[in-house]
Amino acid sequence: MKRLLGSIAALWVLAASGAGWAMGEGVMVHDPWIREAPPTASALAGYMEINNHSKMRQTLVGATSDDFAKVMLHQTVMQGGTAKMVHRHKIEIPKGMKLAFKPGGYHLMMMKPKRKLKVGDQVTVALEFSEGSKREVVFTVRKAMGMAGGHHKH
Image (cartoon, rainbow, N blue to C red):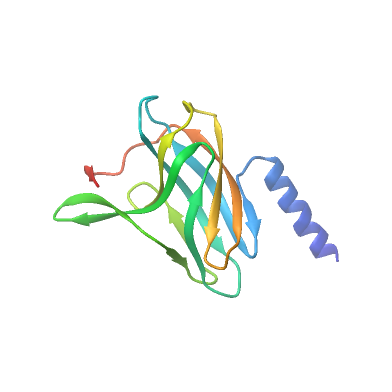
């Protein structure tokens, strides 16, 4: 019981600190953020780390947000020396593993923002998993600390 209360207290402190964790069904999301872009940008990129603490593989199959016309799952891959973004219909996270959505790798492609976003703004994104569950995660807009190399091409 003491250990359980300690764990609950630790999660509460983490949530209160704004560390960006969202939890449910054994899946935790850490450090969700959106790369700042010019106000005229038609697409923004979202990043996070998904930790699968459940006893089975989890499959991310989509995402939605009231702040964007569409949110897609993407992965940057190298083809012929050029970084290319590829749409993914699903992304699997093996049990007990974590998967980083980061510049130059997996990311959320957030199309047609419905409002101008600046550093510090927050956006709620619902992550959709194959078993039908959804997890609402709050992403914070922040400056990128450098760009992943190469030119991107859709």
